[in-house]
Length: 194
Length: 194
DNA sequence: TAATAAAATCAACGCTGTGTTCAAAATCCC
DNA sequence: GGGATTTTGAACACAGCGTTGATTTTATTA
Image (tube, rainbow over all chains, first blue to last red; front, side, top):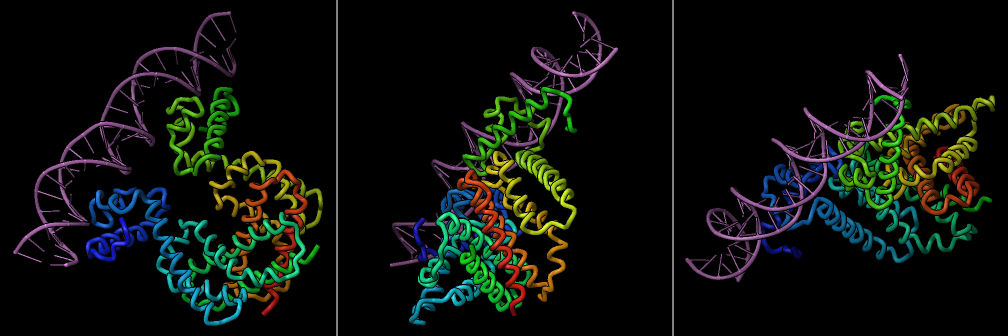
Protein backbone atom coordinates (compact mmCIF):
# COMPACT_ATOMS: atom_id res chain seq x y z
CA UNK A 1 0.00 0.00 0.00
CA UNK A 2 2.75 2.44 0.96
CA UNK A 3 5.57 3.68 -1.19
CA UNK A 4 7.19 0.31 -1.55
CA UNK A 5 10.27 1.24 -3.46
CA UNK A 6 11.55 -1.81 -1.66
CA UNK A 7 9.99 -4.90 -3.04
CA UNK A 8 10.81 -5.72 -6.59
CA UNK A 9 7.60 -7.71 -7.02
CA UNK A 10 5.44 -4.71 -6.20
CA UNK A 11 7.17 -2.52 -8.71
CA UNK A 12 6.82 -5.09 -11.44
CA UNK A 13 3.16 -5.64 -10.64
CA UNK A 14 2.35 -1.94 -10.68
CA UNK A 15 4.22 -1.47 -13.90
CA UNK A 16 2.28 -4.27 -15.53
CA UNK A 17 -1.01 -2.82 -14.32
CA UNK A 18 -0.22 0.65 -15.57
CA UNK A 19 1.00 -0.52 -18.91
CA UNK A 20 -2.17 -2.55 -19.40
CA UNK A 21 -4.27 0.39 -18.28
CA UNK A 22 -2.79 2.86 -20.73
CA UNK A 23 -3.07 0.27 -23.45
CA UNK A 24 -6.78 -0.24 -22.77
CA UNK A 25 -7.33 3.50 -22.42
CA UNK A 26 -6.20 3.88 -25.98
CA UNK A 27 -9.08 1.73 -27.09
CA UNK A 28 -12.01 2.61 -24.87
CA UNK A 29 -13.28 5.06 -22.25
CA UNK A 30 -12.42 4.38 -18.64
CA UNK A 31 -15.98 3.57 -17.66
CA UNK A 32 -15.99 0.48 -19.83
CA UNK A 33 -12.74 -0.95 -18.53
CA UNK A 34 -13.37 -3.66 -15.96
CA UNK A 35 -10.95 -4.86 -13.33
CA UNK A 36 -11.19 -8.37 -14.71
CA UNK A 37 -10.32 -7.24 -18.20
CA UNK A 38 -7.47 -5.08 -16.96
CA UNK A 39 -5.95 -7.95 -15.00
CA UNK A 40 -6.15 -10.31 -17.92
CA UNK A 41 -4.43 -7.74 -20.11
CA UNK A 42 -1.77 -7.26 -17.44
CA UNK A 43 -1.43 -10.98 -16.81
CA UNK A 44 -1.84 -10.68 -13.09
CA UNK A 45 -4.29 -12.01 -10.55
CA UNK A 46 -7.38 -10.00 -9.81
CA UNK A 47 -6.72 -10.20 -6.09
CA UNK A 48 -3.34 -8.60 -6.63
CA UNK A 49 -4.97 -5.58 -8.22
CA UNK A 50 -7.19 -5.09 -5.20
CA UNK A 51 -4.12 -5.29 -2.97
CA UNK A 52 -2.90 -2.03 -4.52
CA UNK A 53 -5.96 -0.16 -5.75
CA UNK A 54 -9.57 0.03 -4.68
CA UNK A 55 -10.88 0.33 -8.23
CA UNK A 56 -10.08 1.57 -11.72
CA UNK A 57 -10.64 5.20 -10.83
CA UNK A 58 -8.30 4.92 -7.87
CA UNK A 59 -5.68 3.67 -10.30
CA UNK A 60 -6.16 6.65 -12.57
CA UNK A 61 -6.11 9.07 -9.65
CA UNK A 62 -2.83 7.66 -8.37
CA UNK A 63 -1.28 7.91 -11.81
CA UNK A 64 -2.47 11.46 -12.19
CA UNK A 65 -1.14 12.44 -8.81
CA UNK A 66 2.29 11.17 -9.63
CA UNK A 67 2.18 12.94 -12.96
CA UNK A 68 1.21 16.15 -11.22
CA UNK A 69 4.12 15.79 -8.83
CA UNK A 70 6.41 15.36 -11.79
CA UNK A 71 4.96 18.54 -13.22
CA UNK A 72 5.64 20.46 -10.05
CA UNK A 73 9.11 19.04 -9.73
CA UNK A 74 9.99 19.90 -13.30
CA UNK A 75 8.62 23.41 -13.14
CA UNK A 76 10.00 24.46 -9.78
CA UNK A 77 13.76 24.38 -10.32
CA UNK A 78 13.44 26.07 -13.67
CA UNK A 79 11.61 28.96 -12.09
CA UNK A 80 14.00 29.29 -9.19
CA UNK A 81 17.13 29.62 -11.23
CA UNK A 82 15.62 32.48 -13.16
CA UNK A 83 15.47 34.61 -10.07
CA UNK A 84 12.54 36.66 -11.31
CA UNK A 85 8.78 36.05 -11.39
CA UNK A 86 8.03 33.94 -14.42
CA UNK A 87 6.25 35.43 -17.39
CA UNK A 88 3.23 33.68 -18.89
CA UNK A 89 5.33 32.96 -21.95
CA UNK A 90 7.88 31.06 -19.89
CA UNK A 91 5.26 29.12 -17.99
CA UNK A 92 3.44 28.24 -21.20
CA UNK A 93 6.64 26.95 -22.71
CA UNK A 94 7.32 24.94 -19.57
CA UNK A 95 3.92 23.34 -19.60
CA UNK A 96 4.29 22.19 -23.16
CA UNK A 97 7.75 20.90 -22.52
CA UNK A 98 6.49 18.87 -19.57
CA UNK A 99 3.68 17.52 -21.67
CA UNK A 100 6.15 16.44 -24.31
CA UNK A 101 8.47 14.87 -21.75
CA UNK A 102 5.60 12.81 -20.31
CA UNK A 103 3.90 12.20 -23.62
CA UNK A 104 3.32 8.52 -23.03
CA UNK A 105 1.15 9.08 -20.00
CA UNK A 106 -0.28 12.38 -21.18
CA UNK A 107 -1.67 11.03 -24.41
CA UNK A 108 -3.81 8.62 -22.45
CA UNK A 109 -4.62 10.74 -19.45
CA UNK A 110 -5.46 13.67 -21.71
CA UNK A 111 -6.37 11.66 -24.79
CA UNK A 112 -9.70 11.02 -26.44
CA UNK A 113 -10.95 9.15 -23.42
CA UNK A 114 -8.95 11.23 -20.98
CA UNK A 115 -9.69 13.21 -17.87
CA UNK A 116 -10.27 16.85 -18.70
CA UNK A 117 -10.54 17.82 -15.05
CA UNK A 118 -6.96 16.75 -14.59
CA UNK A 119 -5.95 18.93 -17.51
CA UNK A 120 -7.71 21.81 -15.80
CA UNK A 121 -5.60 21.26 -12.71
CA UNK A 122 -2.44 21.54 -14.78
CA UNK A 123 -3.63 24.85 -16.13
CA UNK A 124 -4.54 26.02 -12.66
CA UNK A 125 -0.95 25.34 -11.71
CA UNK A 126 0.14 27.56 -14.58
CA UNK A 127 -2.16 30.38 -13.48
CA UNK A 128 -0.74 30.17 -10.00
CA UNK A 129 2.74 30.56 -11.33
CA UNK A 130 1.71 33.65 -13.25
CA UNK A 131 -0.08 35.09 -10.28
CA UNK A 132 2.35 37.99 -9.77
CA UNK A 133 2.33 38.89 -13.42
CA UNK A 134 -1.41 39.05 -13.88
CA UNK A 135 -1.96 40.54 -10.45
CA UNK A 136 -0.14 43.67 -11.50
CA UNK A 137 -2.20 44.30 -14.61
CA UNK A 138 -4.69 47.14 -14.15
CA UNK A 139 -7.69 45.04 -14.99
CA UNK A 140 -11.07 46.45 -14.19
CA UNK A 141 -13.57 43.64 -14.37
CA UNK A 142 -16.36 42.38 -12.21
CA UNK A 143 -15.64 39.18 -10.28
CA UNK A 144 -18.32 37.56 -12.35
CA UNK A 145 -16.54 38.48 -15.56
CA UNK A 146 -13.24 37.24 -14.22
CA UNK A 147 -14.84 33.94 -13.41
CA UNK A 148 -16.17 33.54 -16.92
CA UNK A 149 -12.90 34.75 -18.41
CA UNK A 150 -10.95 32.21 -16.43
CA UNK A 151 -13.27 29.45 -17.53
CA UNK A 152 -12.85 30.42 -21.17
CA UNK A 153 -9.09 30.65 -21.22
CA UNK A 154 -8.48 27.59 -19.06
CA UNK A 155 -10.70 25.33 -21.06
CA UNK A 156 -9.36 26.82 -24.27
CA UNK A 157 -5.84 26.05 -23.17
CA UNK A 158 -6.85 22.49 -22.35
CA UNK A 159 -8.45 22.12 -25.77
CA UNK A 160 -5.30 23.32 -27.48
CA UNK A 161 -3.14 21.03 -25.36
CA UNK A 162 -5.24 18.02 -26.16
CA UNK A 163 -5.34 18.81 -29.85
CA UNK A 164 -1.61 19.23 -29.89
CA UNK A 165 -0.98 15.98 -28.02
CA UNK A 166 -3.33 13.96 -30.15
CA UNK A 167 -2.23 15.28 -33.51
CA UNK A 168 1.49 15.09 -33.82
CA UNK A 169 3.01 16.71 -30.79
CA UNK A 170 6.18 15.33 -32.25
CA UNK A 171 6.60 18.33 -34.55
CA UNK A 172 7.93 20.36 -31.66
CA UNK A 173 6.44 22.66 -29.11
CA UNK A 174 7.25 25.84 -31.03
CA UNK A 175 4.10 26.43 -33.02
CA UNK A 176 1.75 25.41 -30.22
CA UNK A 177 3.50 27.43 -27.53
CA UNK A 178 3.63 30.46 -29.77
CA UNK A 179 -0.05 30.31 -30.66
CA UNK A 180 -1.13 29.54 -27.12
CA UNK A 181 0.74 32.52 -25.82
CA UNK A 182 -0.70 34.84 -28.44
CA UNK A 183 -4.20 33.60 -27.72
CA UNK A 184 -3.92 34.09 -23.98
CA UNK A 185 -2.44 37.55 -24.47
CA UNK A 186 -5.28 38.53 -26.74
CA UNK A 187 -7.85 37.19 -24.32
CA UNK A 188 -6.38 39.25 -21.52
CA UNK A 189 -6.83 42.31 -23.69
CA UNK A 190 -10.53 41.55 -23.86
CA UNK A 191 -10.67 42.35 -20.16
CA UNK A 192 -9.68 45.94 -20.86
CA UNK A 193 -12.52 46.54 -23.26
CA UNK A 194 -15.90 47.65 -22.01
CA UNK B 1 -39.19 2.60 -30.60
CA UNK B 2 -40.42 4.99 -33.28
CA UNK B 3 -41.72 8.48 -32.75
CA UNK B 4 -44.79 7.44 -30.86
CA UNK B 5 -46.40 10.80 -30.40
CA UNK B 6 -49.49 8.64 -30.41
CA UNK B 7 -49.69 6.64 -27.26
CA UNK B 8 -50.18 8.55 -24.07
CA UNK B 9 -48.59 5.81 -22.02
CA UNK B 10 -45.32 6.03 -23.93
CA UNK B 11 -45.08 9.74 -23.42
CA UNK B 12 -45.68 9.41 -19.70
CA UNK B 13 -43.13 6.62 -19.39
CA UNK B 14 -40.46 8.53 -21.27
CA UNK B 15 -41.16 11.64 -19.23
CA UNK B 16 -40.76 9.69 -16.01
CA UNK B 17 -37.51 8.17 -17.22
CA UNK B 18 -36.05 11.50 -18.28
CA UNK B 19 -37.07 13.24 -15.12
CA UNK B 20 -35.46 10.51 -13.04
CA UNK B 21 -32.37 10.62 -15.21
CA UNK B 22 -31.81 14.35 -14.87
CA UNK B 23 -32.46 14.06 -11.17
CA UNK B 24 -29.80 11.37 -10.79
CA UNK B 25 -27.39 13.25 -13.03
CA UNK B 26 -27.46 16.09 -10.56
CA UNK B 27 -26.04 13.76 -7.95
CA UNK B 28 -23.55 11.54 -9.74
CA UNK B 29 -21.71 10.97 -13.01
CA UNK B 30 -23.44 8.99 -15.70
CA UNK B 31 -21.12 6.01 -15.42
CA UNK B 32 -22.36 5.23 -11.94
CA UNK B 33 -26.05 5.36 -12.78
CA UNK B 34 -27.45 1.87 -13.23
CA UNK B 35 -30.57 0.95 -15.16
CA UNK B 36 -31.97 -0.64 -12.05
CA UNK B 37 -31.47 2.45 -9.99
CA UNK B 38 -32.91 4.68 -12.69
CA UNK B 39 -36.05 2.59 -12.97
CA UNK B 40 -36.60 2.59 -9.24
CA UNK B 41 -36.25 6.36 -9.20
CA UNK B 42 -38.68 6.67 -12.10
CA UNK B 43 -41.08 4.14 -10.60
CA UNK B 44 -41.24 2.03 -13.74
CA UNK B 45 -40.40 -1.51 -14.60
CA UNK B 46 -36.93 -2.34 -15.77
CA UNK B 47 -38.26 -4.15 -18.80
CA UNK B 48 -40.09 -1.01 -19.86
CA UNK B 49 -36.84 0.89 -19.96
CA UNK B 50 -35.33 -1.66 -22.29
CA UNK B 51 -38.37 -1.35 -24.54
CA UNK B 52 -37.35 2.24 -25.31
CA UNK B 53 -33.59 2.46 -24.79
CA UNK B 54 -30.74 0.04 -25.13
CA UNK B 55 -28.82 1.50 -22.19
CA UNK B 56 -28.18 4.64 -20.18
CA UNK B 57 -25.95 6.15 -22.83
CA UNK B 58 -28.58 5.58 -25.49
CA UNK B 59 -30.95 7.54 -23.28
CA UNK B 60 -28.55 10.43 -23.03
CA UNK B 61 -27.83 10.37 -26.74
CA UNK B 62 -31.53 10.52 -27.58
CA UNK B 63 -32.03 13.44 -25.21
CA UNK B 64 -29.08 15.25 -26.68
CA UNK B 65 -30.28 14.69 -30.21
CA UNK B 66 -33.64 16.21 -29.44
CA UNK B 67 -31.97 19.13 -27.72
CA UNK B 68 -29.79 19.64 -30.76
CA UNK B 69 -32.82 19.62 -33.03
CA UNK B 70 -34.38 22.25 -30.82
CA UNK B 71 -31.24 24.26 -31.20
CA UNK B 72 -31.34 24.06 -34.96
CA UNK B 73 -35.03 24.86 -35.07
CA UNK B 74 -34.65 27.86 -32.83
CA UNK B 75 -31.66 29.25 -34.69
CA UNK B 76 -32.87 28.74 -38.26
CA UNK B 77 -35.91 30.99 -38.45
CA UNK B 78 -34.13 33.77 -36.63
CA UNK B 79 -31.36 33.74 -39.18
CA UNK B 80 -33.71 33.59 -42.15
CA UNK B 81 -35.74 36.60 -41.22
CA UNK B 82 -32.63 38.71 -41.01
CA UNK B 83 -31.93 38.24 -44.66
CA UNK B 84 -28.18 38.64 -44.30
CA UNK B 85 -25.40 36.32 -43.22
CA UNK B 86 -25.31 36.28 -39.43
CA UNK B 87 -22.49 37.93 -37.57
CA UNK B 88 -20.66 36.04 -34.84
CA UNK B 89 -22.20 38.42 -32.33
CA UNK B 90 -25.70 37.43 -33.38
CA UNK B 91 -24.92 33.74 -33.35
CA UNK B 92 -23.32 34.00 -29.94
CA UNK B 93 -26.37 35.75 -28.56
CA UNK B 94 -28.59 33.10 -30.09
CA UNK B 95 -26.63 30.27 -28.56
CA UNK B 96 -26.87 31.75 -25.10
CA UNK B 97 -30.56 32.44 -25.51
CA UNK B 98 -31.15 28.83 -26.51
CA UNK B 99 -29.15 27.64 -23.55
CA UNK B 100 -31.27 29.77 -21.26
CA UNK B 101 -34.51 28.57 -22.84
CA UNK B 102 -33.50 24.95 -22.32
CA UNK B 103 -31.81 25.52 -19.02
CA UNK B 104 -33.41 22.54 -17.30
CA UNK B 105 -31.88 20.04 -19.69
CA UNK B 106 -28.72 21.99 -20.32
CA UNK B 107 -27.69 22.21 -16.73
CA UNK B 108 -27.59 18.46 -16.53
CA UNK B 109 -26.36 17.66 -20.01
CA UNK B 110 -23.67 20.30 -19.67
CA UNK B 111 -23.42 20.27 -15.88
CA UNK B 112 -20.71 19.00 -13.61
CA UNK B 113 -21.23 15.46 -14.77
CA UNK B 114 -22.25 16.52 -18.26
CA UNK B 115 -21.15 15.65 -21.76
CA UNK B 116 -18.56 18.08 -23.04
CA UNK B 117 -18.52 16.50 -26.47
CA UNK B 118 -22.12 17.50 -26.89
CA UNK B 119 -21.25 21.05 -25.95
CA UNK B 120 -18.57 20.95 -28.62
CA UNK B 121 -21.20 20.01 -31.19
CA UNK B 122 -23.24 23.05 -30.25
CA UNK B 123 -20.24 25.25 -30.81
CA UNK B 124 -19.52 23.53 -34.11
CA UNK B 125 -23.02 24.51 -35.15
CA UNK B 126 -22.17 28.10 -34.27
CA UNK B 127 -18.99 28.00 -36.34
CA UNK B 128 -20.94 26.68 -39.30
CA UNK B 129 -23.32 29.56 -39.06
CA UNK B 130 -20.49 32.06 -39.06
CA UNK B 131 -18.77 30.31 -41.91
CA UNK B 132 -19.34 33.12 -44.41
CA UNK B 133 -18.15 35.75 -41.98
CA UNK B 134 -14.89 34.11 -41.02
CA UNK B 135 -14.29 32.82 -44.51
CA UNK B 136 -13.93 36.38 -45.79
CA UNK B 137 -11.30 37.41 -43.27
CA UNK B 138 -7.81 37.63 -44.78
CA UNK B 139 -6.32 35.15 -42.36
CA UNK B 140 -2.90 33.77 -43.18
CA UNK B 141 -2.30 30.77 -40.99
CA UNK B 142 -1.09 27.27 -41.50
CA UNK B 143 -3.75 24.54 -41.40
CA UNK B 144 -2.02 23.26 -38.29
CA UNK B 145 -2.41 26.59 -36.57
CA UNK B 146 -6.04 26.85 -37.58
CA UNK B 147 -6.64 23.43 -36.06
CA UNK B 148 -5.10 24.45 -32.75
CA UNK B 149 -6.88 27.80 -32.83
CA UNK B 150 -10.21 26.13 -33.38
CA UNK B 151 -9.57 23.74 -30.49
CA UNK B 152 -8.72 26.63 -28.19
CA UNK B 153 -11.69 28.84 -28.98
CA UNK B 154 -14.24 26.01 -29.11
CA UNK B 155 -13.23 24.52 -25.82
CA UNK B 156 -12.95 27.97 -24.33
CA UNK B 157 -16.46 28.76 -25.42
CA UNK B 158 -17.69 25.52 -23.89
CA UNK B 159 -15.95 26.35 -20.65
CA UNK B 160 -17.58 29.74 -20.51
CA UNK B 161 -20.98 28.27 -21.34
CA UNK B 162 -20.69 25.70 -18.59
CA UNK B 163 -19.51 28.21 -16.06
CA UNK B 164 -22.36 30.51 -16.93
CA UNK B 165 -24.95 27.74 -16.74
CA UNK B 166 -23.70 26.39 -13.45
CA UNK B 167 -23.30 29.70 -11.68
CA UNK B 168 -26.40 31.75 -11.99
CA UNK B 169 -27.33 31.90 -15.64
CA UNK B 170 -30.44 33.55 -14.28
CA UNK B 171 -28.72 36.93 -14.19
CA UNK B 172 -29.32 37.35 -17.88
CA UNK B 173 -27.30 36.55 -20.98
CA UNK B 174 -25.92 40.08 -21.35
CA UNK B 175 -22.64 39.85 -19.53
CA UNK B 176 -21.77 36.39 -20.76
CA UNK B 177 -22.63 37.10 -24.38
CA UNK B 178 -20.69 40.32 -24.31
CA UNK B 179 -17.59 38.76 -22.83
CA UNK B 180 -17.76 35.70 -25.05
CA UNK B 181 -17.94 37.85 -28.11
CA UNK B 182 -15.03 40.02 -27.06
CA UNK B 183 -12.94 36.97 -26.29
CA UNK B 184 -13.61 35.32 -29.64
CA UNK B 185 -12.89 38.58 -31.46
CA UNK B 186 -9.61 38.94 -29.66
CA UNK B 187 -8.65 35.37 -30.38
CA UNK B 188 -9.27 35.88 -34.06
CA UNK B 189 -6.86 38.78 -33.96
CA UNK B 190 -4.19 36.41 -32.72
CA UNK B 191 -4.32 34.79 -36.13
CA UNK B 192 -3.12 37.96 -37.78
CA UNK B 193 0.02 38.19 -35.69
CA UNK B 194 3.13 36.42 -36.77
C1' DT C 1 -69.21 1.15 -25.26
C1' DA C 2 -67.17 -2.88 -26.46
C1' DA C 3 -63.42 -5.13 -29.11
C1' DT C 4 -58.89 -5.09 -30.40
C1' DA C 5 -54.27 -3.58 -30.31
C1' DA C 6 -50.42 -1.95 -27.76
C1' DA C 7 -47.79 -1.15 -23.71
C1' DA C 8 -46.42 -1.92 -18.94
C1' DT C 9 -45.79 -5.27 -15.31
C1' DC C 10 -44.01 -9.22 -12.75
C1' DA C 11 -41.11 -13.06 -11.99
C1' DA C 12 -37.63 -15.61 -13.52
C1' DC C 13 -33.59 -16.92 -16.30
C1' DG C 14 -28.36 -17.26 -17.26
C1' DC C 15 -24.53 -14.36 -17.51
C1' DT C 16 -20.76 -11.28 -16.13
C1' DG C 17 -18.21 -8.51 -13.04
C1' DT C 18 -17.43 -7.20 -8.10
C1' DG C 19 -14.99 -7.39 -3.83
C1' DT C 20 -13.55 -10.50 -0.40
C1' DT C 21 -11.72 -14.84 1.72
C1' DC C 22 -8.12 -18.44 2.51
C1' DA C 23 -4.54 -21.73 1.94
C1' DA C 24 -0.78 -22.69 -1.01
C1' DA C 25 2.95 -21.37 -3.93
C1' DA C 26 6.40 -18.13 -5.46
C1' DT C 27 9.50 -14.45 -4.63
C1' DC C 28 12.18 -11.11 -2.22
C1' DC C 29 15.42 -9.27 1.31
C1' DC C 30 18.52 -9.80 4.98
C1' DG D 1 19.18 -20.37 3.61
C1' DG D 2 15.20 -18.83 6.15
C1' DG D 3 11.59 -15.87 7.59
C1' DA D 4 8.71 -12.41 5.72
C1' DT D 5 6.06 -10.73 2.16
C1' DT D 6 3.65 -10.98 -2.09
C1' DT D 7 1.20 -13.31 -5.61
C1' DT D 8 -1.71 -16.91 -6.99
C1' DG D 9 -5.89 -19.76 -7.67
C1' DA D 10 -10.16 -21.07 -6.29
C1' DA D 11 -14.22 -20.18 -4.16
C1' DC D 12 -17.81 -17.26 -2.17
C1' DA D 13 -22.11 -14.20 -1.96
C1' DC D 14 -23.79 -10.36 -4.16
C1' DA D 15 -25.50 -7.10 -7.61
C1' DG D 16 -26.58 -5.46 -12.11
C1' DC D 17 -27.44 -6.79 -16.90
C1' DG D 18 -30.36 -7.97 -20.78
C1' DT D 19 -33.86 -11.08 -22.14
C1' DT D 20 -38.01 -14.01 -21.94
C1' DG D 21 -42.99 -15.19 -21.59
C1' DA D 22 -47.31 -14.92 -19.39
C1' DT D 23 -50.41 -11.57 -17.39
C1' DT D 24 -52.54 -7.20 -16.49
C1' DT D 25 -53.44 -2.55 -17.62
C1' DT D 26 -54.35 1.11 -20.75
C1' DA D 27 -55.34 3.42 -25.16
C1' DT D 28 -57.37 3.61 -29.76
C1' DT D 29 -61.12 3.00 -33.10
C1' DA D 30 -65.05 0.99 -34.95
